[in-house]
Length: 184
Image (tube, rainbow, N blue to C red; front, side):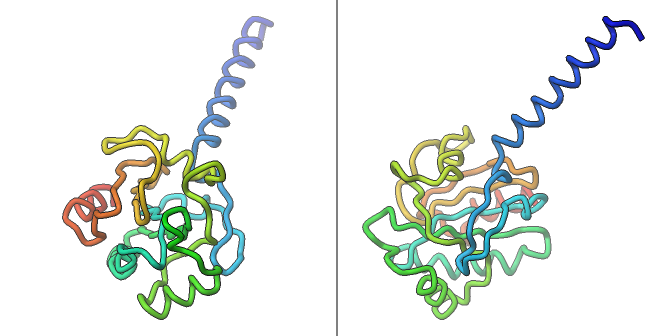
């Protein structure tokens, strides 16, 4: 093989590697976070699943949505669907408890079994990079800062944000169920 061909092959290989690296750095799967029990987990463990990522709060008017989220999780988990709850105290101090208190509240009041993560910030100067990415990705609904608790991000099996829902979108609402079923 002549030098020119070797150079072309090396350039193509380099471009392929750069593209693969770029895709990894713009993916939800790059993040490692703590579950509410303190165990560190990579979102890569959810690769191939459809996800509904939700910022939650225990003392919010939308807190009752935990029940609907748990029901969704139970109804569709066998089809590769997961709800991922991210408690956040960004809005009106509505998630003031410790991780242990949040976990107990969710289990006792709503029977939550879907993965809950350690409390993080979803907005502001200390916004977690996962939510910085999710709020900036173009999608058919809207981009920008999270406005309140219980906003929902529907992620397809390839890690792409396909829909985003405001807080008032009920987990058992027709729009959310239809969008979920379309990606399952």
